[in-house]
Image (cartoon, rainbow, N blue to C red):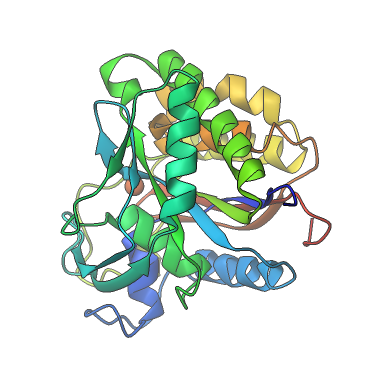
Length: 298
Ligand SMILES: [Fe+2]
């Protein structure tokens, strides 16, 4: 069997607003427009990914929150309605997705072998979180590739960002090892925003872009700092800055998604491609791609 490979690693942010603004058939609310810089960024990502082939998509989501270890989707098919708890007016999405249970189990077992607490989610009625769904939809709206869903072990909340870094570094290495053994070509999605301080009220028309901006200048400076490190290929420096980024910018990297992604890619020094940056209710969001195969725009 040929060795498996991570074809690309992507930061794929998941504000429900961008699915709302896309008006897909699966989502009940409809919008006039909105958050185009991010939606066009996802369009550029999809175009870039057309030049490679892959078998499965692994998605790490901050909104599947587990306090005892890392969990993995372990049922062949999930079908239900996902309603965003904060924005039910924007996101009521009917999903129907397939899981690569074999790869899911391989990553779960490899991570356990390396000392992490892991568990397979076998409940067929489990409600898949919107962080997984939005990143999956915006990257691959056809849903024609099976996914592996990975939960966010809330180590930053329960212990500290430093403890999270150590565990998610191990999870990333285990993910790489399991994928290589699987023989599959795999796309990784770290579903998260960058700076994450957001407004506490919503405008009457959610897609009124005259009201959309970063929550404050210090958050913007942090976002530009981490994006520049990505564009320069300084992923090890970025890794070491994550705890400070979490503390100063309330960054959604507290989830471990970015740490996992960087470790799984083995800290590439190749410059990443920034497909788009934009704010959603004041939070900073970037669509960033590292191509690890021969193709891509980077
Ligand atoms: Fe989020």
